[in-house]
Length: 81
Image (cartoon, rainbow, N blue to C red):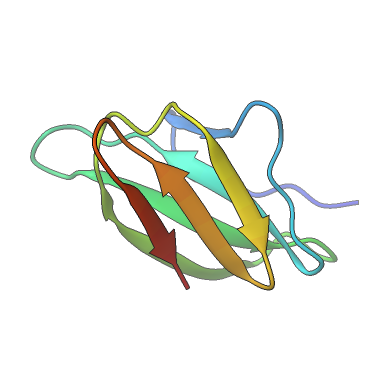
């Protein structure tokens, strides 16, 4: 249906994180660029927004509820809108 390119280091979370309207994709940048989370529109793949920079250890637990993405890091939980 659609295709969106975010860069060679982009990937969706495993398992995939999707809310009612958006798919959340993690772009793991380099130290000078930083990592970001992109919101992709589920209907057409357009970039609806982004969060970041986010810590590079963002490979842990996460959840989506009511349009808020919750991420778990070594010592804290963070909410992103």
